[in-house]
Length: 239
Image 1 (cartoon, helix red, strand yellow):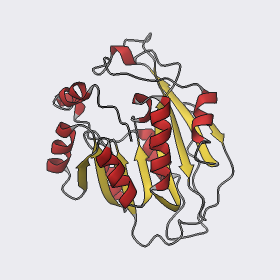
Image 2 (spheres, helix red, strand yellow):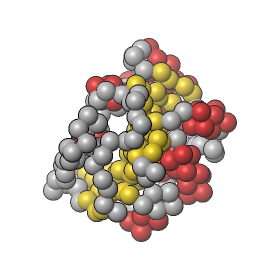
Image 3 (cartoon, helix red, strand yellow):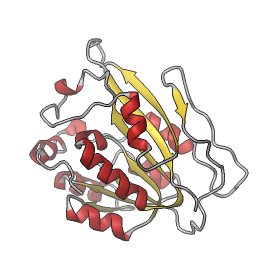
Image 4 (cartoon, one colour):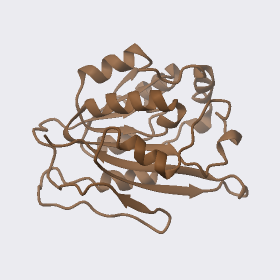
């Protein structure tokens, strides 16, 4: 799996900056995790937390049954960064692993979240992790748009293969309306923007059961800099 390592020095410097040590989860990920079927009650329905700030489009309708055979609830935060989503996953009842290509990010996470396991993943090490583990839930937040389309599809395939039947992938892609990235602290790292057609084609390379929405906002006082992300929930077939 060819991950974004050309700018690893940029990311290692980034994770030494105090502002990179975010301790709160992305609200869209909170909503997506809350939308997952209840694991202890097969008849429970997922909540629809769409708001005026996000539009949701549906792929194939999904069932509300829990992932079959899931005796240990395992979650992977692939590209965990400083670990902002680790407490959310732990509080949601998962046994959590996190991985990132930045050594500084992993050092920080190991010291901050001892309840979880962390690994540095790049190239062969990422492929090894994904080939030996199976997860009920994988989060890939703020990762895929740093890869070429070919490499992102390769990673999507590996993530899908690492899900148990009925498991979920929650992720993001940077939206084509984004104008802020080049002004950010990691603006010298490469990025790929996607329109809706490209998003759907990307998801449908591995999934038929998916939903997506988008978020747009601006930094305070910088209304010309639009931060825009697609976010999605995709489910592996139960059989």
